[in-house]
Length: 97
Image (tube, rainbow, N blue to C red; front, side):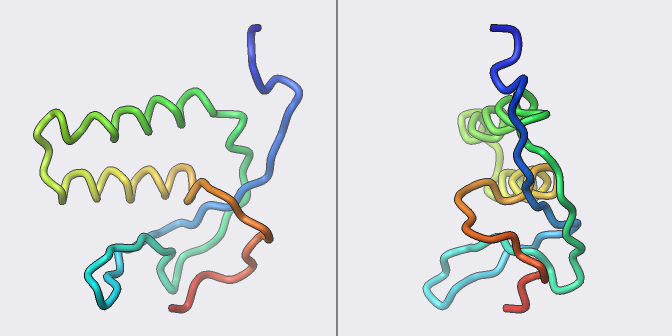
């Protein structure tokens, strides 16, 4: 099979900027900034790059990277590909939390 998603497309949103926010218990969350601009793209058109980038981030801990370096890599991943996961509706405005 040459291209697994050859006849498939999917619209997804990614924002121009993301920031880390800490909950009261110290848990970190990555969210779009208040000034971030949404952009629609098709993640399936670049699924191979997404998988490779995700694997490289996953390998960072075994490469003795600092938590700050890993967080920065995750943040850069989100700018490139958005927060991949389940989404029931396309957000029309950036998060204001």
